[in-house]
Image 1: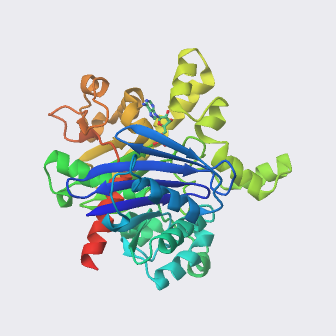
Image 2: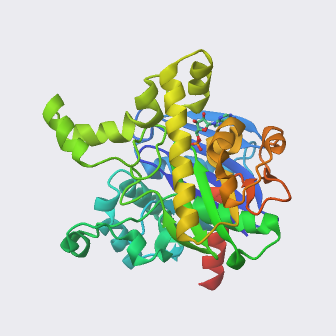
Image 3: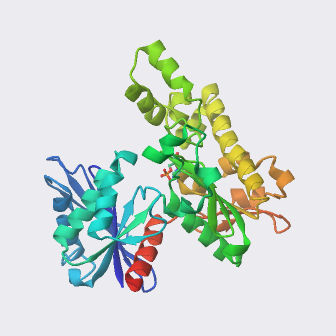
Length: 400
Ligand code: AMP
């Protein structure tokens, strides 16, 4: 069975075609700048890239080009679109209603449209991606994989905010959590790697990329996560502030004579590592600047690692202990120095961190970075959201 995975952004479509027999990636690519005259498709097969530049007025045109490429004589990987069994779509928000991957029906589409206020940047693009597939590949099954779904098992006392009750009842103001597809993949992969059943493990999953979040996964179910009503809450990130006192918003509006949209934009796009360093949101640039003596870069890294450590402590408390911790995503998978700083001083939890293994880790594979004697296993687990989407799509299609 071959599954096409689609991740549609406002002007882009990321895609992967995966053969589920052997879970093999056949092709992947990206359509960028959709809606402009300089749109571009980059299609990759076995690491070899092909580029096509041409104007594309909407997502349907972008998708048509992708499909043409998939069956192309020279660069294609299938002989006919009939080989594609179903399409799995990454969807930002399940609005607290969808706790698992769901087959697209007219009713689901209606619900997705009603979730637009909860994700005004991503939801319209996700919907366009599905509509493009419905138009261009008539009759194929489409499945939504929600970024919030894995967090649907959080207890009410974890996901509710202590705000006027009516805000929740009228508008759904609560913690939803994001990166769910990634946290689910990481937790399952970690349990598999440890040779244990996930139902026996208390796991803290750290997805540390430009966007960053931590999830507490107790016996297979998410019980808390650091992102909130939007991805702004929680850890310090590449450009997002993470947790702050909301009173700062009005204070800065007043001082800088800005409106609320400007201040929220600054909290989402000009804060975090970028805001503190004034140099970059990329951890590589910041570590280099720190090594060159830049004290704001030292401060940003200390704040970043401290915020991850704080959530690890909080989540081990809420789960009554922790059996395993996983590091994942761009920074979590690649930066031994950040992992070391986060784990420093966590011996009290029963962590025996292995600095040698941490420094000698192998990129791109599951890798243990704690000693055999450690009560808490610590691993690097490369995340693979597309594979997770493909697996869930297959499961939904087989059930349907
Ligand atoms: P992501 O959002 O998961 O793509 O992660 C982005 C972050 O990961 C950036 O801060 C990058 O500096 C970091 N990163 C990605 N790849 C590497 C790498 N090969 N070595 C070091 N850092 C990396």
